[in-house]
Length: 358
Image 1 (cartoon, one colour):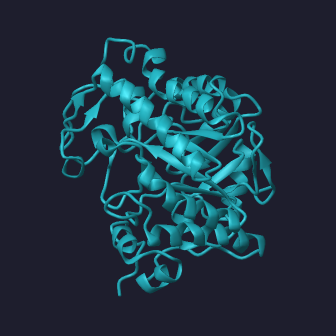
Image 2: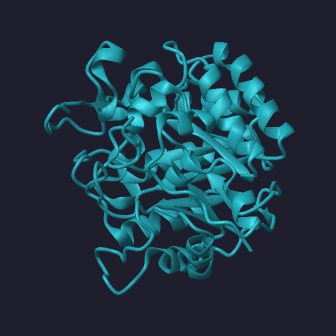
């Protein structure tokens, strides 16, 4: 099943059920334009047989930039480099998606030159955002739509809205980070208004045959907080009504059961919440073909690989040949052979036992 095509409700066909998950890699230029290292990394995975290639989180606005070396889609100057990327991905036979992102409270003040903003004002360690004004909200909606339209111009098959991991859209969904009392906060309908409005307007602006997906954190984990499982499933249902093609559940570890219902896995719950023609994607420590097939058995239509894709740029071809994918640690030289730049390798060295000591 993993290597069979999948037609999404918009009519776009994915060559197989294996996607490259969006990965923070810091391989683009300081100004957000596509870097040669980023291009090489993504193209290498397309050439390795991944059916869908998703860019790293790509900022739609300068005040949403989360880290140095992040890819941008906030202005027309980004389009030529992104067009080069989509051409390389298509040439390899894969589908290219761009993950649209705004950091919100997690934007880096040193990079954006101002105080980050979020749904509400709060303080948590180094994070101390100001509350969004109505103008902020109206502007960021327009910026997401403009980013989606640039993606279409550059040849991407579609976009994934980053509504996970405690970034801006997830912050609005949160009951702890969003304490607003206007139409953008309070009830679930109000907290979901921002992500739903962006999804609806993206579909309207980019047309019926453009992929619109959403990545969600279904429960609290790491920077994602204030999320209830049943609320998240309801948000997924409403996004399906809005015309999205898939919901991407970022589980971090697919072996875990849900926190709210320890006897239940998230995938069957998500599958049951969605119409049959809305695809489900899952990510979280999927290494082997058996891991991936098990996820399909639980209700996933597509698996998204992160760390295993870094180590195994040919993962689909590896498992098709009956071989066992490699696991860390890898030396920096081995990572370099897999189109991982020295800068990305340095970032990966922060992950326990991922980069072998020289």
